[in-house]
Image (cartoon, rainbow, N blue to C red; front, top):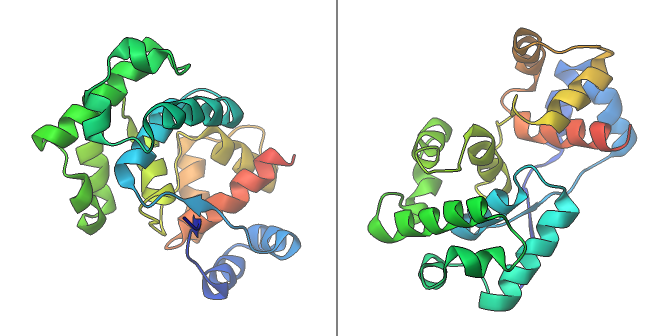
Length: 203
C-alpha cells in the first residue's frame, strides 16, 4: 500500500511566509516538508497512544511488534487480546489498558471513528479526550497525522514550543506568547507545525 502524505501546496507556504517573516526564512531554506499520514483513524490512535512520552524510534519498534503479532490493529482484533498480550509487545500495562479501552469504545459505539472525519476539530478533541489515556495532545496529533486537518498547533507539544523559542530567540515561551505568535499561522497552523518541529529537531 502506497504511503499517504499531508496534502498542501505552495499557496499555504506563501501565506505563512507572507504573514511571518522569520518562519518564511525557514520555509525558503528548508523547502517543502513531507509528513506521512495514517488514514485509518483507529490504527493511528493506537500508534499515538504507544508514542506517548517515548521516543519516535521506541514507539516505532513497539508498534512494529504489535503489527507483527496481529496485523493492522482493529477494535475487533484488539478486543481478543489482554493487557498482558499487548505488554509483551513492549508497551506499558497502562498503555495497553488505554488501547483496549479505545477498542471497546469503538465496538460499543462510544466513539464512531468512521464519523470523525466529518466533525469539527473541537468536536473530535471533545470526543477523543473522553477516552482514558487520550489527552488533548493525542487528539491534536490525530487531527494532523490522520485526519490531515490544516489548522492545528499544539501548545502541549514540547517540540512545537522548542521550535518557537528557537525561531524567535526566546528563553521562555508563555501560553500568552504562544497564542500571540501562532496567530500568524492560521489557517495553516498544521503546516507551520511541520517547520517548528524541523527547527526543534535540527537545532
